[in-house]
Structure formats: structure tokens, C-alpha cells
Length: 87
Image 1 (tube, rainbow, N blue to C red):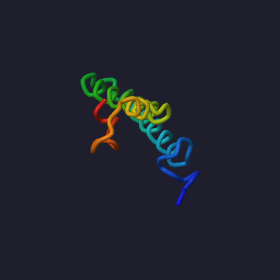
Image 2: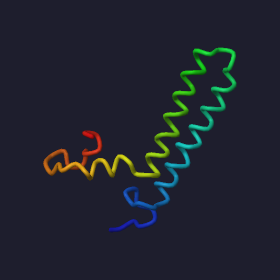
Image 3: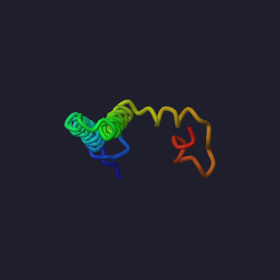
Image 4: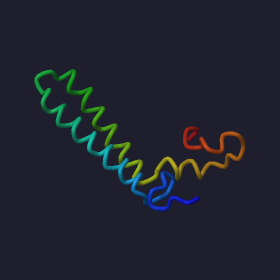
């Protein structure tokens, strides 16, 4: 059974674009929250790091960086489905 446009593992599916959008939105909202904490610099830095992390996750989801790294590894044993975690 193929899901096509709704498949989670497809390159250009609604699920992938939804994930990219949600992660980018979380990064933006976290950055807005960090700018409102300008008076408390130590807390704002933590929120900026979190915002940057969400944006990086969004870019990774869009560019499929972890998948490209994972498929470049030649692992064909029990770790076949977890190649990107070993990179």
C-alpha cells in the first residue's frame, strides 16, 4: 500500500512539509519569546539557543541532511534503519 502524498517517508509529502513548517514556526515563536526576555540576559540566551535548534531542525528536515549522511554510510546489518544516528 502506497500513501504517496501523505506518506511520512516520501521526499515531498504533506507530512514532511508540515514538519518543516511546525519546526520553523517553533523557532520563530521561541525567538520572539527570547526578545521579550531582553532584561534577563541569562534566560534569553537559553531561549535563543533553543530557537536556533528548532530552525536547524527545520532546515535539516527540508534538506534531508541526516538521510544523506545515513545513506552514505555502508551499514547493512541490524543498524540498517538507524544509520543516521551513527553518523
